Length: 266
Image 1 (tube, rainbow, N blue to C red):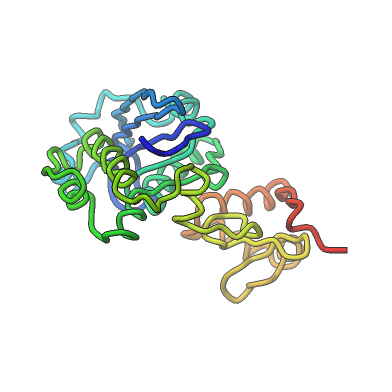
Image 2: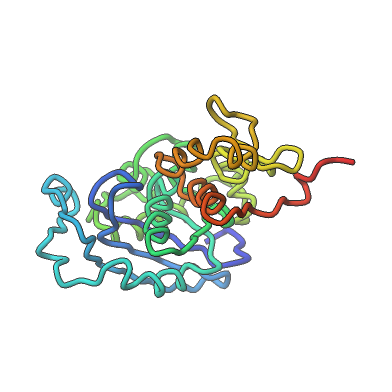
């Protein structure tokens, strides 16, 4: 792989009970950890989601209630999975929109803060869409010259994603060659934004709402004057990290520390 890694890169894929990271549950999690020296370590967890797997979902990935009835739950394996991901950057196909939020939600349910915004993201779909604009099966055909056998199986999709990433790095010399540069290339970051989507933003040393009718208002002020608005955020369909920050303020009166670049200028 012609990208310089200064910390491990985890390429992963999730099969789940549905398409909502907030509502649905992980059934299968397949992971390839690529170390800075190029060595790899693979893991795959088949999990009992604790809820019924809809038949239409089983028709896609082939995993039914019967198959996972004796499998461990995510809670059973949370410590093991969390440790495996610790200190690693993240990669997947459409991972920014689904796999990463889905994993973050599962960790939040067991009281663990995954903090994906503190990791670099290399979403292979974003590279592909930036360069060619297709889906995973078409990416395999285009970059690798073969059909994607085993599509919608987590292990096959994970291996195909890593193979496509390697082919993209071979094909496009203009792509960045470090994880940090790739992350910035795919999703440029504003250092004043707390989360990757910029829903919370630092302004003059205060953490503020950056969307809707309360845009520009500080969380500290809303906590004192309009706590119901913050409760609405916690219950809403917002990113896990945003809801956890707001919930921590409501429950414990805590806010993240202001970074130096967001401090008021004297």
